[in-house]
Length: 236
Image (cartoon, rainbow, N blue to C red; front, side, top):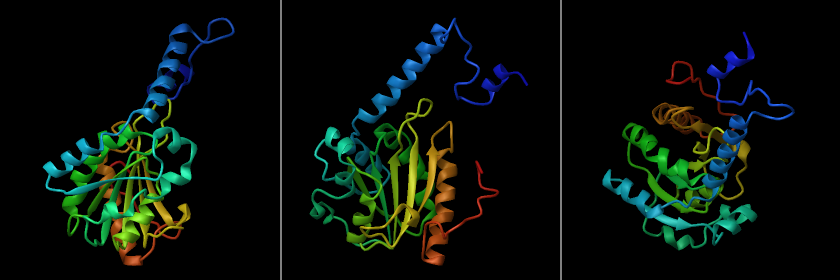
């Protein structure tokens, strides 16, 4: 197979050619455009109220909270602030729930705005009840631990925008943690990543998440000790 034929199988930058000692102008401009889109994805704000209205239209109430990072610049400089709530009392409108789902902007707010609702549309009907839904501005994955603990949840699922790549500025990640509480490590979570149209479709991700949720409840754990058989699932 010639190198140029590989381009039909992957969006990665392979077989770009060259012009003298550099890239062809078209390829260089394409790279610069992809880089700009990735940078923009980090800084585009999440319209949390609009997302809340989308959830409400489907009969799913939610609350909007903020992390301790007061703005985007601080969020990027201080990851630790994105892991805790600015005002824990903002959760007082929600009662206790077995399952909490956190929608956090992360490093790609666009990913949450685009893919979170389609994923929930496929996931929630499979659950025994609607989970507590919390939208977080300037949030990191670990903020779900504090939210889950305060809501008395046995399990928390964090849907969060992943770090943008040059071919994936809108990739969503989902992190599942059993018995959430501050101090949990990434080794105690299961992750489903690259949720987007060009990666793992939201409906397929929802099915995998449901399998993880049921397995976590059965074994009462998540993380490196929880393995699920994804064979036969859509997109597996």
